[in-house]
Length: 336
Image (cartoon, rainbow, N blue to C red; front, top):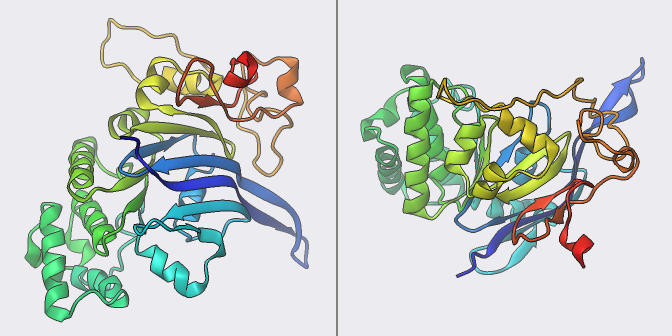
């Protein structure tokens, strides 16, 4: 049975103004997210990867409305079947939808208030959304802590009394407290030790099965993304350059940037060698991106059309769900 699309993003833009001079006039914009198109199916994990500064976190914050995008559409399908554009909602409508979409931040310590106990951190969203009386809310908090392998009496402790892995499990439990469907995970394990990363990742997969969650998993560790994701979107300089199922992405990448990223994954076998693709130059400024394909200044396969015509994200010929934005790849439209 085909999974329904829970979130569809079209032409999403997030521009940050650049101020200059004594009077702080706007002299330009940092195009952190620029014309992004993607969709997320119910119950799946969509991985989002790319170099630092490519716009992954900005996109994630836009999806949960922590930042208001400059333009585009974000259509979310509610449990009752209605589809709403998240960018056109009123304040009350936005509050109601927020119950269904939550986020787990990269740094578990700074995302918890150090002067509030875990009980207070959990109780506030439950009260805001009018979920039960005091005794019922306390029971919910205890159950949530148990679901992430922590004792219920830990709710009376403060954040500094926990280890990094415990704090991140607490943040995951807090994201679950108002029964969301979609959780944006913004590099949730990058601040943890490798051994703790494995525990948290396995916990997240277990919770996804138990509660029927949908994840958008943002990370730069490609091995972690492969383990977690059903589909993967590769982002470069504010745009999606490749979108495909995880197996297809890792076995047969089509975009030169994806090939370079995958060639950098360490292989735990000293006898197995892989040719490393070293990209020349630096990442261009998102305030002044190159014309044409944004990757052409570093691409080893660049041709003349790449320097002038921006490629569109299109379905690769002979595939069902593999999209890429590259002039060198034959698409279904070329075949037709």
